[in-house]
Image 1 (cartoon, rainbow, N blue to C red):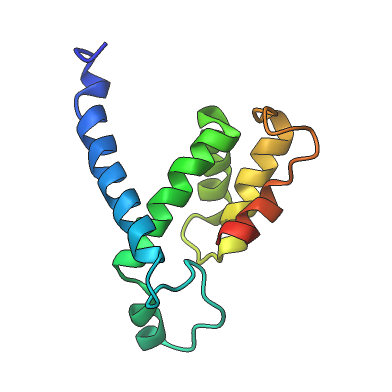
Image 2 (tube, helix red, strand yellow):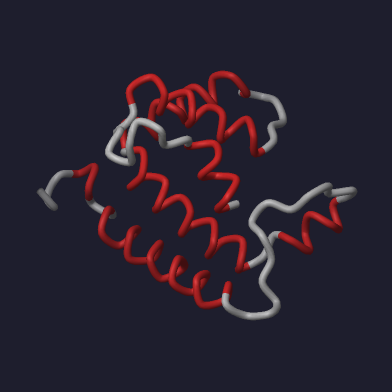
Length: 126
């Protein structure tokens, strides 16, 4: 399996990803933590002050868990929709969450239960 060209960097990428994930989780315990998704961003300075290592660490933890919750194929389908709908344009977080939620509602892994609401789950996490 590891000899396949498309999997050449698979394990090293996930090892790096996990390193950032666990770093983000430990940083999230500190008083200097902040949510991944902030409220209103007035200017570039606001954006730069919120986009830091904690954002990367917590963001990677969220993405890894999202794959586990809704399934790889669902995320892939949602990403295709997201990029098709918003190519060459600006987006907000609800656009991304909405595309993944749409894919989940279409044919996502229902192991979380039929009443699982992906959008509410994202609101809780983000």
